[in-house]
Length: 165
Image (cartoon, rainbow, N blue to C red):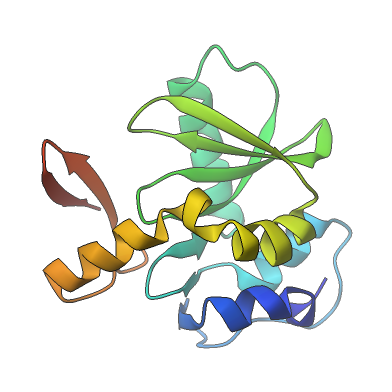
């Protein structure tokens, strides 16, 4: 998988930040779709901070946090991205055609039957406002005058917004 396989996603959500190197790594293909995603988009921020992509170490860290916070959920997951509200997007290890969203604010889990490539290029494009709350994010940017940095998320709290790092 290379950046070109995410062309529709990248056109819809322009890249605003990419880790230390400033551009995606697209060299040799790796053995799994997730490894290729990390190489292609890992550490990247898209849509002015709307969605950001994990790199291997952050994925492992968030896997542990998800396991701790969502202890009732027993299946193994691999986090690959997170949005402006801190929701973690994961591939279910036992079913690579299942994308799960873990919401740390509400402790809810949402599932979408989709491959990772289709999730990126179809679901996030056609249903992006429902999945990522784009309208609310645009409103937040208008009120606060900027997008989010890679390590920032917003928490809704009784009519207020708080930036968490």
